[in-house]
Amino acid sequence: MSSFLPITLEQLARENGVLLKDRTTPCRAAWAAAAPVLVVAKNKELPACIVHIWGVDINTASFAMYAFSISVLVQALLIISMSAAADHGRYRKTLLLVFAFAGSIGTMLFIGVVPSVYLLGALLAIIGNTCFGASFVLLNSFLPLLVRHHPSIIQEHDACTGPEQADTGQGMDEGVIDSTTSLLPRDPPPTVGAAVTSELRLSTRISSYGIGIGYAAGLLVQCLCVLVVMATGSTTFSLRLALLIAGAWWFVFTLPAALWLRPRPGPPLPAAQSASWYSYISYAWTSLFVTIFHASQLKDILLFLGAWFLLSDAIATVSGTAVLFAKTTLGMHTAALGLINVLATLSGICGAFGWAQISARLGLVPSQTIFACIWLFELIPLYALLGFVPAIQRLGVIGLQQPWEMYPLGIIYGFVLGGLSSYCRSLFGELIPPGYEAAFYALYAITDKGSSVFGPAIVGAITDRYGDIRPAFIFLAVLIALPLPLMWQVDVDRGRQEARLLRDELDSKADAAVANGEVVEPRSVQADQSFD
Image (cartoon, rainbow, N blue to C red; front, side):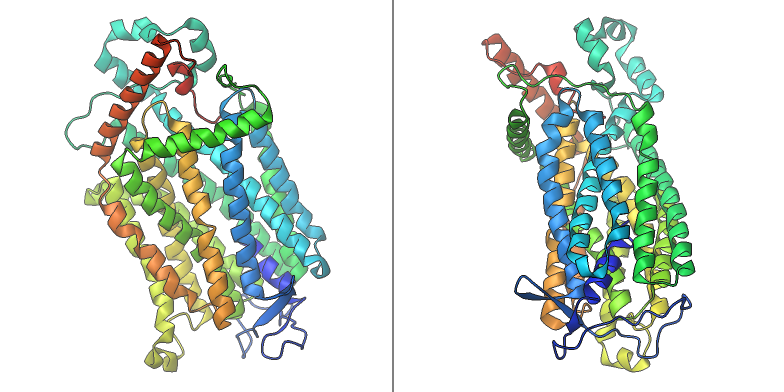
Protein backbone atom coordinates (compact mmCIF):
# COMPACT_ATOMS: atom_id res chain seq x y z
CA MET A 1 0.00 0.00 0.00
CA SER A 2 2.71 2.49 0.96
CA SER A 3 4.53 1.75 -2.30
CA PHE A 4 1.76 2.80 -4.68
CA LEU A 5 -0.23 5.26 -2.56
CA PRO A 6 2.06 8.34 -2.93
CA ILE A 7 2.48 8.00 -6.69
CA THR A 8 -1.25 7.35 -7.13
CA LEU A 9 -2.12 10.56 -5.28
CA GLU A 10 0.50 12.52 -7.23
CA GLN A 11 -0.75 11.15 -10.53
CA LEU A 12 -4.41 11.87 -9.74
CA ALA A 13 -3.50 15.44 -8.76
CA ARG A 14 -1.27 15.86 -11.84
CA GLU A 15 -4.12 14.98 -14.17
CA ASN A 16 -6.10 17.85 -12.62
CA GLY A 17 -3.23 20.34 -12.44
CA VAL A 18 -1.66 23.01 -14.59
CA LEU A 19 1.98 23.66 -15.46
CA LEU A 20 3.85 25.64 -12.82
CA LYS A 21 5.65 27.74 -15.43
CA ASP A 22 2.49 29.39 -16.82
CA ARG A 23 -0.28 28.25 -14.42
CA THR A 24 -2.73 27.84 -17.31
CA THR A 25 -1.67 24.91 -19.51
CA PRO A 26 -3.28 21.62 -18.37
CA CYS A 27 -0.66 19.22 -17.08
CA ARG A 28 -0.69 15.69 -18.42
CA ALA A 29 1.95 13.19 -17.33
CA ALA A 30 3.85 11.43 -20.11
CA TRP A 31 3.03 7.87 -19.15
CA ALA A 32 3.91 5.66 -22.11
CA ALA A 33 1.85 2.51 -22.25
CA ALA A 34 3.79 -0.69 -21.48
CA ALA A 35 7.07 1.20 -21.24
CA PRO A 36 10.14 -0.89 -20.44
CA VAL A 37 10.96 -0.90 -16.77
CA LEU A 38 14.45 0.55 -17.08
CA VAL A 39 13.76 3.07 -19.84
CA VAL A 40 12.58 6.66 -19.55
CA ALA A 41 11.84 9.35 -22.07
CA LYS A 42 14.66 11.43 -23.48
CA ASN A 43 13.34 14.51 -21.67
CA LYS A 44 13.11 12.49 -18.50
CA GLU A 45 12.08 15.12 -15.96
CA LEU A 46 8.32 15.60 -15.79
CA PRO A 47 7.17 19.23 -15.83
CA ALA A 48 6.30 20.65 -12.42
CA CYS A 49 2.55 20.83 -11.93
CA ILE A 50 0.33 22.51 -9.38
CA VAL A 51 -3.28 22.06 -8.31
CA HIS A 52 -5.51 24.79 -6.90
CA ILE A 53 -7.06 23.57 -3.64
CA TRP A 54 -9.16 25.89 -1.49
CA GLY A 55 -7.40 28.99 -2.76
CA VAL A 56 -3.87 27.60 -2.47
CA ASP A 57 -1.55 26.43 -5.26
CA ILE A 58 0.07 23.13 -4.25
CA ASN A 59 2.74 21.17 -6.12
CA THR A 60 1.35 17.77 -7.10
CA ALA A 61 4.23 16.02 -5.32
CA SER A 62 3.54 18.09 -2.20
CA PHE A 63 -0.12 17.09 -2.38
CA ALA A 64 0.80 13.48 -1.61
CA MET A 65 3.13 14.51 1.24
CA TYR A 66 0.51 16.75 2.84
CA ALA A 67 -2.10 13.99 2.67
CA PHE A 68 0.33 11.66 4.43
CA SER A 69 1.02 14.25 7.16
CA ILE A 70 -2.69 14.72 7.82
CA SER A 71 -3.20 10.96 8.04
CA VAL A 72 -0.39 10.69 10.57
CA LEU A 73 -1.89 13.45 12.72
CA VAL A 74 -5.30 11.74 12.70
CA GLN A 75 -3.58 8.44 13.41
CA ALA A 76 -1.76 9.78 16.47
CA LEU A 77 -4.94 11.27 17.94
CA LEU A 78 -6.81 8.02 17.28
CA ILE A 79 -4.13 5.84 18.86
CA ILE A 80 -4.22 7.90 22.05
CA SER A 81 -8.01 8.00 22.26
CA MET A 82 -8.54 4.28 21.66
CA SER A 83 -5.86 3.01 24.04
CA ALA A 84 -8.08 2.75 27.14
CA ALA A 85 -10.86 0.97 25.24
CA ALA A 86 -8.27 -1.48 23.91
CA ASP A 87 -6.77 -2.11 27.36
CA HIS A 88 -10.03 -2.40 29.30
CA GLY A 89 -13.09 -4.53 28.69
CA ARG A 90 -13.63 -6.73 25.64
CA TYR A 91 -12.69 -4.25 22.91
CA ARG A 92 -9.14 -5.29 22.04
CA LYS A 93 -9.87 -7.79 19.30
CA THR A 94 -12.90 -5.80 18.16
CA LEU A 95 -10.84 -2.66 17.60
CA LEU A 96 -8.14 -4.61 15.78
CA LEU A 97 -10.68 -6.07 13.37
CA VAL A 98 -12.59 -2.82 12.89
CA PHE A 99 -9.45 -0.91 11.91
CA ALA A 100 -8.11 -3.73 9.74
CA PHE A 101 -11.33 -4.21 7.80
CA ALA A 102 -12.05 -0.47 7.50
CA GLY A 103 -8.52 0.22 6.25
CA SER A 104 -8.52 -2.63 3.76
CA ILE A 105 -11.93 -1.67 2.37
CA GLY A 106 -10.88 1.97 2.11
CA THR A 107 -7.81 0.91 0.15
CA MET A 108 -9.85 -1.27 -2.19
CA LEU A 109 -12.22 1.63 -2.87
CA PHE A 110 -9.39 3.40 -4.72
CA ILE A 111 -10.47 1.41 -7.77
CA GLY A 112 -13.34 3.86 -8.17
CA VAL A 113 -11.33 7.08 -7.70
CA VAL A 114 -11.07 8.79 -11.08
CA PRO A 115 -8.98 11.96 -11.61
CA SER A 116 -12.01 14.26 -11.40
CA VAL A 117 -12.54 13.26 -7.73
CA TYR A 118 -8.88 13.19 -6.72
CA LEU A 119 -9.69 14.76 -3.34
CA LEU A 120 -11.67 11.61 -2.54
CA GLY A 121 -8.42 9.73 -3.12
CA ALA A 122 -6.73 11.87 -0.46
CA LEU A 123 -9.57 11.08 1.96
CA LEU A 124 -9.30 7.33 1.31
CA ALA A 125 -5.52 7.55 1.73
CA ILE A 126 -5.99 9.21 5.12
CA ILE A 127 -8.49 6.52 6.17
CA GLY A 128 -6.31 3.65 4.93
CA ASN A 129 -3.08 4.93 6.46
CA THR A 130 -4.76 5.81 9.76
CA CYS A 131 -6.36 2.38 10.09
CA PHE A 132 -3.13 0.63 9.13
CA GLY A 133 -1.20 2.47 11.83
CA ALA A 134 -3.86 1.80 14.46
CA SER A 135 -3.93 -1.91 13.59
CA PHE A 136 -0.16 -2.13 13.83
CA VAL A 137 -0.13 -0.48 17.26
CA LEU A 138 -2.65 -3.02 18.53
CA LEU A 139 -0.14 -5.74 17.66
CA ASN A 140 3.01 -4.01 18.88
CA SER A 141 2.90 -4.86 22.58
CA PHE A 142 2.65 -8.59 21.86
CA LEU A 143 6.44 -8.75 21.78
CA PRO A 144 7.28 -8.42 25.51
CA LEU A 145 4.45 -10.82 26.38
CA LEU A 146 5.65 -13.43 23.91
CA VAL A 147 9.13 -13.13 25.35
CA ARG A 148 8.07 -13.20 29.00
CA HIS A 149 5.93 -16.31 28.55
CA HIS A 150 8.26 -18.20 26.23
CA PRO A 151 9.02 -21.67 27.68
CA SER A 152 12.76 -21.01 27.80
CA ILE A 153 12.30 -17.80 29.78
CA ILE A 154 9.81 -19.43 32.16
CA GLN A 155 12.24 -22.28 32.82
CA GLU A 156 15.09 -19.84 33.40
CA HIS A 157 12.92 -17.80 35.75
CA ASP A 158 11.79 -20.85 37.70
CA ALA A 159 15.39 -22.04 37.98
CA CYS A 160 16.35 -18.69 39.51
CA THR A 161 13.36 -18.29 41.85
CA GLY A 162 13.10 -21.92 42.92
CA PRO A 163 10.10 -24.25 42.91
CA GLU A 164 8.69 -23.02 46.21
CA GLN A 165 8.12 -19.47 45.01
CA ALA A 166 6.83 -20.71 41.67
CA ASP A 167 4.26 -22.92 43.42
CA THR A 168 2.89 -20.08 45.49
CA GLY A 169 1.82 -18.14 42.43
CA GLN A 170 3.11 -15.04 44.28
CA GLY A 171 -0.12 -14.92 46.25
CA MET A 172 -2.35 -13.83 43.36
CA ASP A 173 -6.07 -14.18 43.46
CA GLU A 174 -7.20 -17.20 41.47
CA GLY A 175 -9.93 -15.29 39.68
CA VAL A 176 -7.47 -12.70 38.46
CA ILE A 177 -5.09 -15.42 37.29
CA ASP A 178 -7.82 -17.11 35.28
CA SER A 179 -8.64 -13.97 33.35
CA THR A 180 -5.29 -12.28 32.98
CA THR A 181 -2.51 -14.75 33.63
CA SER A 182 -1.13 -14.64 30.09
CA LEU A 183 -0.66 -10.88 30.36
CA LEU A 184 0.84 -10.66 33.82
CA PRO A 185 4.56 -9.84 33.99
CA ARG A 186 7.23 -12.07 35.39
CA ASP A 187 10.25 -10.54 37.00
CA PRO A 188 13.20 -11.40 34.79
CA PRO A 189 16.00 -13.52 36.19
CA PRO A 190 19.07 -11.79 37.52
CA THR A 191 21.57 -10.62 34.95
CA VAL A 192 25.31 -10.92 35.06
CA GLY A 193 27.35 -7.79 34.42
CA ALA A 194 26.69 -5.99 31.16
CA ALA A 195 25.88 -9.13 29.22
CA VAL A 196 22.86 -9.12 26.99
CA THR A 197 20.02 -10.97 28.79
CA SER A 198 18.28 -14.05 27.50
CA GLU A 199 15.13 -11.98 27.18
CA LEU A 200 16.79 -9.39 24.98
CA ARG A 201 18.29 -12.07 22.74
CA LEU A 202 14.92 -13.82 22.44
CA SER A 203 13.12 -10.51 21.92
CA THR A 204 15.49 -9.58 19.12
CA ARG A 205 15.13 -12.99 17.49
CA ILE A 206 11.32 -12.98 17.61
CA SER A 207 11.22 -9.41 16.35
CA SER A 208 13.61 -10.24 13.52
CA TYR A 209 11.59 -13.27 12.44
CA GLY A 210 8.36 -11.29 12.60
CA ILE A 211 9.77 -8.50 10.47
CA GLY A 212 11.26 -11.02 8.05
CA ILE A 213 7.98 -12.87 7.60
CA GLY A 214 6.20 -9.55 7.10
CA TYR A 215 8.70 -8.56 4.44
CA ALA A 216 8.26 -11.92 2.71
CA ALA A 217 4.49 -11.42 2.55
CA GLY A 218 5.02 -7.87 1.35
CA LEU A 219 7.34 -9.14 -1.35
CA LEU A 220 4.70 -11.49 -2.72
CA VAL A 221 2.04 -8.81 -3.00
CA GLN A 222 4.58 -6.32 -4.39
CA CYS A 223 5.55 -8.70 -7.18
CA LEU A 224 1.91 -9.38 -7.95
CA CYS A 225 1.14 -5.65 -8.13
CA VAL A 226 4.14 -4.93 -10.37
CA LEU A 227 3.09 -7.68 -12.78
CA VAL A 228 -0.45 -6.30 -12.87
CA VAL A 229 0.82 -2.75 -13.47
CA MET A 230 3.03 -3.90 -16.35
CA ALA A 231 0.25 -6.01 -17.85
CA THR A 232 -2.24 -3.12 -17.79
CA GLY A 233 0.02 -0.52 -19.39
CA SER A 234 1.37 1.46 -16.39
CA THR A 235 -1.58 3.86 -16.37
CA THR A 236 -3.45 5.60 -13.57
CA PHE A 237 -5.92 2.71 -13.65
CA SER A 238 -2.95 0.36 -13.14
CA LEU A 239 -2.09 2.15 -9.90
CA ARG A 240 -5.68 1.98 -8.67
CA LEU A 241 -5.79 -1.72 -9.53
CA ALA A 242 -2.60 -2.29 -7.54
CA LEU A 243 -4.19 -0.63 -4.51
CA LEU A 244 -7.26 -2.85 -4.94
CA ILE A 245 -4.99 -5.90 -4.78
CA ALA A 246 -3.14 -4.57 -1.72
CA GLY A 247 -6.41 -3.86 0.08
CA ALA A 248 -7.79 -7.29 -0.78
CA TRP A 249 -4.59 -8.93 0.53
CA TRP A 250 -4.94 -7.01 3.80
CA PHE A 251 -8.62 -7.99 4.09
CA VAL A 252 -8.06 -11.69 3.41
CA PHE A 253 -5.17 -12.07 5.85
CA THR A 254 -7.15 -10.35 8.59
CA LEU A 255 -9.64 -13.22 8.49
CA PRO A 256 -7.39 -15.71 10.39
CA ALA A 257 -7.16 -13.22 13.26
CA ALA A 258 -10.93 -12.78 13.18
CA LEU A 259 -11.43 -16.54 13.37
CA TRP A 260 -8.70 -17.72 15.73
CA LEU A 261 -7.31 -14.83 17.77
CA ARG A 262 -8.38 -15.13 21.42
CA PRO A 263 -10.26 -12.04 22.70
CA ARG A 264 -8.44 -11.99 26.09
CA PRO A 265 -10.74 -9.45 27.77
CA GLY A 266 -8.97 -6.85 29.87
CA PRO A 267 -9.93 -5.53 33.29
CA PRO A 268 -12.70 -2.93 33.62
CA LEU A 269 -12.00 0.75 34.12
CA PRO A 270 -11.33 1.81 37.72
CA ALA A 271 -14.42 1.87 39.91
CA ALA A 272 -14.62 5.67 39.76
CA GLN A 273 -14.99 5.56 35.96
CA SER A 274 -18.14 4.73 34.00
CA ALA A 275 -18.08 2.50 30.91
CA SER A 276 -19.07 5.27 28.49
CA TRP A 277 -16.93 6.13 25.47
CA TYR A 278 -16.27 9.55 26.99
CA SER A 279 -14.81 7.83 30.05
CA TYR A 280 -12.61 5.62 27.89
CA ILE A 281 -11.28 8.59 25.93
CA SER A 282 -10.70 10.85 28.95
CA TYR A 283 -9.05 7.98 30.82
CA ALA A 284 -6.77 7.33 27.82
CA TRP A 285 -5.55 10.93 27.64
CA THR A 286 -5.07 11.09 31.41
CA SER A 287 -3.09 7.85 31.29
CA LEU A 288 -0.92 9.25 28.49
CA PHE A 289 0.10 12.26 30.55
CA VAL A 290 0.78 9.98 33.52
CA THR A 291 2.97 7.79 31.30
CA ILE A 292 4.83 10.84 30.00
CA PHE A 293 5.47 11.86 33.62
CA HIS A 294 6.76 8.37 34.42
CA ALA A 295 8.92 8.32 31.29
CA SER A 296 10.46 11.65 32.28
CA GLN A 297 11.99 9.88 35.29
CA LEU A 298 13.82 7.35 33.10
CA LYS A 299 16.90 8.81 31.40
CA ASP A 300 17.36 6.05 28.85
CA ILE A 301 13.69 6.02 27.88
CA LEU A 302 13.91 9.76 27.20
CA LEU A 303 17.10 9.36 25.16
CA PHE A 304 15.61 6.52 23.14
CA LEU A 305 12.27 8.23 22.50
CA GLY A 306 14.03 11.42 21.44
CA ALA A 307 16.12 9.46 18.95
CA TRP A 308 13.14 7.40 17.83
CA PHE A 309 11.03 10.53 17.25
CA LEU A 310 13.59 11.81 14.76
CA LEU A 311 14.49 8.45 13.27
CA SER A 312 10.93 7.28 12.61
CA ASP A 313 10.15 10.62 10.97
CA ALA A 314 13.20 10.17 8.74
CA ILE A 315 12.22 6.60 7.80
CA ALA A 316 8.71 7.59 6.76
CA THR A 317 9.78 10.77 4.97
CA VAL A 318 12.68 9.28 3.00
CA SER A 319 10.45 6.58 1.55
CA GLY A 320 7.79 8.94 0.21
CA THR A 321 10.30 11.56 -0.90
CA ALA A 322 12.42 9.05 -2.85
CA VAL A 323 9.42 7.56 -4.66
CA LEU A 324 8.08 10.97 -5.68
CA PHE A 325 11.58 12.13 -6.67
CA ALA A 326 11.98 9.07 -8.89
CA LYS A 327 8.64 9.70 -10.56
CA THR A 328 8.72 13.47 -11.05
CA THR A 329 12.45 14.23 -11.40
CA LEU A 330 13.81 11.03 -12.94
CA GLY A 331 10.64 10.27 -14.91
CA MET A 332 10.50 6.63 -13.85
CA HIS A 333 7.42 4.66 -14.83
CA THR A 334 5.12 2.84 -12.42
CA ALA A 335 6.58 -0.61 -13.07
CA ALA A 336 10.09 0.70 -12.43
CA LEU A 337 8.96 2.24 -9.13
CA GLY A 338 7.35 -1.05 -8.20
CA LEU A 339 10.60 -2.87 -8.94
CA ILE A 340 12.43 -0.52 -6.54
CA ASN A 341 10.00 -1.49 -3.80
CA VAL A 342 10.43 -5.18 -4.58
CA LEU A 343 14.21 -4.83 -4.22
CA ALA A 344 13.78 -2.84 -1.00
CA THR A 345 11.51 -5.55 0.39
CA LEU A 346 13.97 -8.32 -0.53
CA SER A 347 16.74 -6.33 1.09
CA GLY A 348 14.55 -5.79 4.15
CA ILE A 349 14.20 -9.55 4.57
CA CYS A 350 17.99 -9.87 4.42
CA GLY A 351 18.31 -7.02 6.91
CA ALA A 352 15.84 -8.50 9.38
CA PHE A 353 17.86 -11.72 9.55
CA GLY A 354 21.29 -10.42 8.56
CA TRP A 355 21.76 -7.72 11.18
CA ALA A 356 21.56 -10.34 13.94
CA GLN A 357 24.46 -12.22 12.32
CA ILE A 358 26.45 -9.03 11.77
CA SER A 359 25.92 -7.96 15.38
CA ALA A 360 26.96 -11.35 16.73
CA ARG A 361 30.09 -11.48 14.58
CA LEU A 362 31.18 -7.95 15.47
CA GLY A 363 30.13 -8.22 19.12
CA LEU A 364 27.70 -5.30 18.90
CA VAL A 365 25.04 -4.65 21.53
CA PRO A 366 21.60 -3.59 20.16
CA SER A 367 22.20 0.14 20.63
CA GLN A 368 25.43 -0.10 18.63
CA THR A 369 23.66 -2.04 15.86
CA ILE A 370 21.04 0.71 15.64
CA PHE A 371 23.86 3.25 15.50
CA ALA A 372 25.42 1.39 12.56
CA CYS A 373 22.06 1.28 10.76
CA ILE A 374 21.66 5.04 11.13
CA TRP A 375 25.11 5.70 9.64
CA LEU A 376 24.27 3.50 6.66
CA PHE A 377 20.89 5.23 6.32
CA GLU A 378 22.65 8.61 6.14
CA LEU A 379 24.27 7.58 2.85
CA ILE A 380 20.95 7.92 0.99
CA PRO A 381 20.41 11.71 1.30
CA LEU A 382 24.15 12.42 1.13
CA TYR A 383 24.34 10.56 -2.18
CA ALA A 384 21.37 12.53 -3.54
CA LEU A 385 23.05 15.79 -2.52
CA LEU A 386 26.02 14.97 -4.76
CA GLY A 387 23.70 15.99 -7.58
CA PHE A 388 24.24 19.62 -6.55
CA VAL A 389 28.02 19.44 -7.20
CA PRO A 390 28.74 21.10 -10.61
CA ALA A 391 31.50 18.65 -11.57
CA ILE A 392 29.21 15.69 -10.90
CA GLN A 393 26.34 17.39 -12.72
CA ARG A 394 28.52 17.60 -15.82
CA LEU A 395 29.13 13.86 -15.64
CA GLY A 396 25.39 13.25 -15.89
CA VAL A 397 25.64 10.32 -13.50
CA ILE A 398 26.06 9.89 -9.70
CA GLY A 399 24.02 11.96 -7.30
CA LEU A 400 20.68 10.51 -8.43
CA GLN A 401 20.85 11.82 -11.98
CA GLN A 402 20.02 8.50 -13.64
CA PRO A 403 17.06 6.22 -12.90
CA TRP A 404 19.22 3.14 -12.33
CA GLU A 405 20.80 4.82 -9.30
CA MET A 406 17.52 4.43 -7.41
CA TYR A 407 17.91 0.65 -7.31
CA PRO A 408 21.04 0.36 -5.12
CA LEU A 409 19.68 3.07 -2.83
CA GLY A 410 16.43 1.11 -2.51
CA ILE A 411 18.46 -1.93 -1.49
CA ILE A 412 20.29 0.10 1.18
CA TYR A 413 17.00 1.52 2.46
CA GLY A 414 15.42 -1.92 2.80
CA PHE A 415 18.47 -3.42 4.51
CA VAL A 416 18.61 -0.57 7.03
CA LEU A 417 14.88 -0.65 7.69
CA GLY A 418 14.97 -4.39 8.35
CA GLY A 419 17.54 -3.85 11.09
CA LEU A 420 15.96 -0.76 12.62
CA SER A 421 12.48 -2.31 12.75
CA SER A 422 13.79 -5.32 14.67
CA TYR A 423 16.26 -3.72 17.03
CA CYS A 424 14.44 -0.51 17.98
CA ARG A 425 11.29 -2.29 19.07
CA SER A 426 13.10 -4.98 21.06
CA LEU A 427 15.51 -2.49 22.66
CA PHE A 428 12.65 -0.28 23.81
CA GLY A 429 10.91 -3.31 25.33
CA GLU A 430 13.93 -3.82 27.59
CA LEU A 431 13.67 -0.27 28.96
CA ILE A 432 9.99 -0.46 29.98
CA PRO A 433 9.01 -0.95 33.65
CA PRO A 434 7.60 -4.51 33.90
CA GLY A 435 3.81 -4.45 34.02
CA TYR A 436 3.45 -1.16 32.15
CA GLU A 437 4.07 -2.42 28.62
CA ALA A 438 0.94 -1.13 26.88
CA ALA A 439 1.20 2.34 28.39
CA PHE A 440 4.81 2.71 27.27
CA TYR A 441 4.26 1.02 23.90
CA ALA A 442 1.43 3.47 23.30
CA LEU A 443 3.94 6.25 23.96
CA TYR A 444 6.37 4.49 21.59
CA ALA A 445 3.70 4.31 18.89
CA ILE A 446 2.64 7.92 19.37
CA THR A 447 6.26 9.01 19.14
CA ASP A 448 6.62 6.92 15.99
CA LYS A 449 3.43 7.96 14.23
CA GLY A 450 3.19 11.49 15.60
CA SER A 451 6.67 12.46 14.51
CA SER A 452 5.82 11.66 10.89
CA VAL A 453 3.47 14.63 10.80
CA PHE A 454 6.44 16.96 10.46
CA GLY A 455 8.84 15.40 7.93
CA PRO A 456 6.45 15.00 4.98
CA ALA A 457 4.91 18.43 5.62
CA ILE A 458 8.36 20.06 5.65
CA VAL A 459 9.36 18.23 2.45
CA GLY A 460 6.09 19.38 0.89
CA ALA A 461 6.79 22.99 1.89
CA ILE A 462 10.35 22.79 0.49
CA THR A 463 9.00 21.38 -2.78
CA ASP A 464 6.39 24.14 -3.02
CA ARG A 465 9.07 26.76 -2.32
CA TYR A 466 11.65 25.58 -4.88
CA GLY A 467 9.47 23.68 -7.35
CA ASP A 468 11.81 20.68 -7.03
CA ILE A 469 12.16 17.83 -4.53
CA ARG A 470 15.98 17.55 -4.56
CA PRO A 471 16.57 20.39 -2.01
CA ALA A 472 14.52 18.37 0.49
CA PHE A 473 17.42 15.91 0.75
CA ILE A 474 19.35 18.56 2.72
CA PHE A 475 16.63 18.47 5.35
CA LEU A 476 16.61 14.65 5.31
CA ALA A 477 20.39 14.46 5.81
CA VAL A 478 20.10 16.62 8.93
CA LEU A 479 17.06 14.71 10.19
CA ILE A 480 18.82 11.33 9.96
CA ALA A 481 21.97 12.61 11.68
CA LEU A 482 20.20 14.13 14.69
CA PRO A 483 19.37 10.80 16.46
CA LEU A 484 23.01 9.63 16.47
CA PRO A 485 24.22 11.38 19.66
CA LEU A 486 21.03 10.45 21.51
CA MET A 487 21.11 6.76 20.60
CA TRP A 488 24.80 6.48 21.45
CA GLN A 489 24.06 7.44 25.07
CA VAL A 490 21.39 4.77 25.64
CA ASP A 491 22.58 2.25 28.26
CA VAL A 492 20.34 -0.83 28.35
CA ASP A 493 21.57 -2.16 31.71
CA ARG A 494 21.12 1.20 33.39
CA GLY A 495 17.73 1.66 31.75
CA ARG A 496 16.52 -1.77 32.81
CA GLN A 497 17.58 -1.15 36.41
CA GLU A 498 15.90 2.27 36.53
CA ALA A 499 12.72 0.77 35.04
CA ARG A 500 12.52 -1.85 37.79
CA LEU A 501 13.09 0.77 40.48
CA LEU A 502 10.29 2.88 39.04
CA ARG A 503 8.03 -0.18 38.90
CA ASP A 504 8.73 -0.89 42.58
CA GLU A 505 8.08 2.74 43.48
CA LEU A 506 4.77 2.83 41.62
CA ASP A 507 3.65 -0.45 43.16
CA SER A 508 4.54 0.83 46.63
CA LYS A 509 2.48 3.96 46.06
CA ALA A 510 -0.43 1.84 44.89
CA ASP A 511 -0.19 -0.32 48.02
CA ALA A 512 -0.08 2.77 50.22
CA ALA A 513 -3.11 4.23 48.48
CA VAL A 514 -5.05 1.00 49.02
CA ALA A 515 -4.06 1.01 52.69
CA ASN A 516 -5.44 4.55 52.98
CA GLY A 517 -8.73 3.48 51.45
CA GLU A 518 -8.23 5.23 48.09
CA VAL A 519 -9.72 3.77 44.91
CA VAL A 520 -6.90 2.76 42.56
CA GLU A 521 -6.31 0.09 39.99
CA PRO A 522 -4.93 -3.06 41.61
CA ARG A 523 -1.41 -4.01 40.67
CA SER A 524 -2.61 -7.06 38.76
CA VAL A 525 -4.81 -4.80 36.64
CA GLN A 526 -1.99 -2.34 36.04
CA ALA A 527 0.10 -5.23 34.86
CA ASP A 528 -2.56 -6.17 32.37
CA GLN A 529 -2.08 -3.08 30.24
CA SER A 530 -1.31 -4.80 26.97
CA PHE A 531 -2.96 -5.12 23.60
CA ASP A 532 -3.94 -8.50 22.23
